[in-house]
Length: 64
Image 1 (cartoon, rainbow, N blue to C red):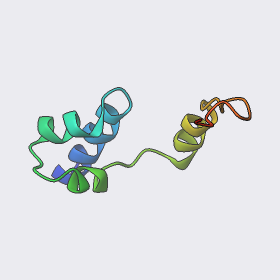
Image 2: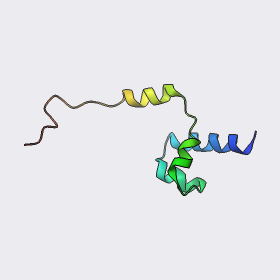
Image 3: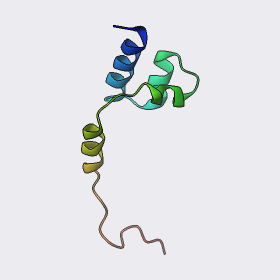
Image 4: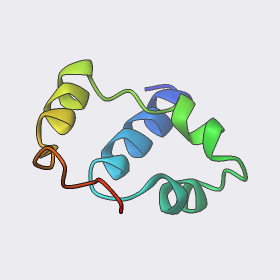
């Protein structure tokens, strides 16, 4: 396993349970964009995450 492969595995695994800012600090990246480049989670996992969003009832977000 190449070093970058290990980095991709670690970052992808950590991002399943921790936020980007924390993972960036753990792996020593000063810029979260760098950490995002290591994220190799499958597209299906992203779709599943989006599917968990519960939209509010119509009118619930209207401010008066």
